Every structure is written in structure tokens, then in C-alpha cells.
Image (cartoon, rainbow, N blue to C red; front, side, top):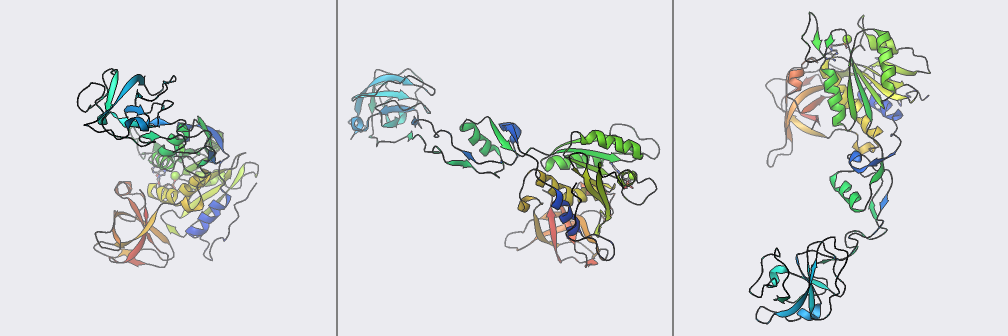
Length: 441
Ligand code: AMP
Ligand code: MG
């Protein structure tokens, strides 16, 4: 198996930098194998092959208006005072397969999207005719076609005709490998007649909370119990990152149960996220269950990172398919910050996104607040904040801290939309200072 091989390991203090850990993670995460998916199942996925146009689009010359298909010579010089009077051959509706031939002196009434009948060169919109009613200008074509129509304006060849191939020419590249399939791309594929496309599938993620204190929301709390919030937080974050994620019922602090649950989950997951049980407590079950694994089963490294929150982290590859496993710390804010920094990029790498599209957008903002914020030396700190984009004329937006630094504060987390990054060397972040901000979207 591929051991996570650090491009650079821990520092002299034994702590890994955020960047070194992330690089280590991304070095072993490979895009998932492409599969052929029905169009709507491929939404948001990365296309893995160029798609060429199998047949011109539109496939035939057709009318872009409701009106009359005519020969240009027949309406040459027509005006309201001297209309061209043409014999109407009948209607051509969208989807019509049998077409009348428009000979000199005749016209066919055509609907938007109807094939241009042979002999016709242009379409005169109904508003430029009497609509076959023998009177003034027509407003619509809801009635039956009259025997003849008076045309009040001339028409150049090609007028109101969508030419075959004018949208996409036969053999042209419609979409290139690497395109992310959003609604317009899926619409194009459908227009080209493609029912399925080769894409990287959405990663399947199992989210597993650990802790004997955890009960599911909806269940009343007994003494010492809390509700499992990480399972929902992390499964939702994985879905937001484009994964198909499910939450597994919280596992008690028992290594045997955890190993059995992981084995079950690995059967249907491309990536596993656990939370809790990775620090140095007496019941740190994830660490206990996944340290010194049989190499057949996989290997997980437990590390301390020079960051706050999120210092203890586990990462490795597990199971026959060597699925990435992230063992995140248990405090909800720590788990979420760790997810955003490490798991989200890994999920996007699995989905085939290029290196430039793995991360949340970042910006620089001016810190606002009443007092300086303390930050531990040698740790990259991620505070929760609310970001306000630059006001008119200002170069920078502002960011205001939400709640304190403590990593159990889920209520404050729910009010935040950004992470404020305080660099390792900064121990006091003063209002007015400029700081990098991760926009959580
Ligand atoms: P641990 O890392 O397991 O020691 O957990 C650290 C803290 O996070 C403890 O206060 C746990 O009760 C809490 N915690 C762990 N897992 C969860 C979870 N799934 N939901 C909410 N809180 C959790
Ligand atoms: Mg725990």
C-alpha cells in the first residue's frame, strides 16, 4: 500500500504545520475511477472525456418565429400599402415531418421551431402580415390559416431562420474533459442526444461519531449525555462539498465496536470521517482502534498539528480499496474547521477537481472589534467570524469575530460565515489589522 509519505514532516516541536499535513493528505488522494452516469446523476460531476457534437445543432433549418415561410423574391418590395399576396399551403408545426414545398406565389404558416419547408428561404413574423385574415396587421396565429396571406414587409434570405449547425457544428468539441457539469452543460448534452456521460462519481462518505456520551437528536438526554451534533455537521459539510454522505449512528467508546463499524462502512464508502477519540484521554477510542493496524487493513497516522482548534488529527488509508480516513477531533468547532481545511479538499480531489479548485475561496479583510485577540504562539489559529465585503471604494472588506476561541461553541459557529486565520507568529491580533479569511460560502 501507499504509505502517506510526507513532503515534509513535523517540526522540531513534533507538531505538523497545517500546510505539511494538508500536502501529506493530498499527496495520496487520487481521483475516483470514471463511471458512465445518466445526465441528472452527473450534475456537479467532472467530465472525464471530451464530448464532440454527433450531429449538427440545430439538426435542421427551422423557424425562430411564428409566421410565414416564404421565398424572398415573392415578398421583395412588399409594404403595408402594397402587400405581397401569397397562397397559404397550410401549417407546419414544431415536430412536423411532412412538409409542403413552397413554390413561387405561396407560403406556409410556420410555428417557432418548425422545420423550414423546402423552397422557403425566410420567415416573415405574423406581426408583419395580416395573419391571413384579410385585414390589418395580425397579432397572433391562434386561428386557422386563411387561404391567403398579405405580407407587409420584405424578407432577406435567412431572416428568422435558425440555420442547421448554427449552434454547434458536427464534429466540434462541445465540452472538454474536466468540465464541471452544471445545468447549462447538462442541457447541452441532452440537446446533443447524450443520455449518459463519463464522469468522476460523487465520493461516497461515511460519517461516524464516537463517544459513549452521544445520543441521536430527538432522543431525550440522560445524565452526562449530549446530542451527536458532529454527525450532522460533518455529513452536511460533505454533501456541501459535493459528496454523497451519510451519518452512521454514534459509536460508543469501545475499540472493537468501532473496528467492526468501520469495516461495515468501508464496503460502501470512498472516504470515512470519524470525530472524537483522537486526543490523549483514557477513552480515546479512534486512536486505540486504529493505531498499529495490520498493514493488510491499512494504516492511520495520529499527529498533533500546529493549529487551533484541531490540534489532534488522524489520517490514513483503510480497507481493501485504501479509502482515505480522517479521524477528526471531537469538539464540534474543531471537527468543522478540520473538515474545511483537510477533508473538503480531499473530497474535491476524489471528485477530480484540479489543484486550483480544491479549497474554499480566501480573501484578506480588516479585523474589526473592541479589543485585541490573543492567539497562541506557534499555532495557526482559525477564529470564527462574519465577513462584510468591501464597501464602495474600499480596498478590503471587514471581518468581525463571532464568539470566543473555545472549540465547543456551536451556537457561535452557526452565526459565522468565515474563518479568520491568525498566523503562527502572531500572538495578538489587533482591530484594524489585515488577516486572511476563509469564506465558508
Ligand atoms: P473527544 O475528542 O472524543 O475527547 O471529544 C472532545 C469533546 O467533543 C467532548 O466534550 C465530547 O463530548 C465532544 N464531542 C465529541 N463528539 C461529539 C459529537 N459527535 N457531537 C457533539 N460533541 C461531541
Ligand atoms: Mg470522545
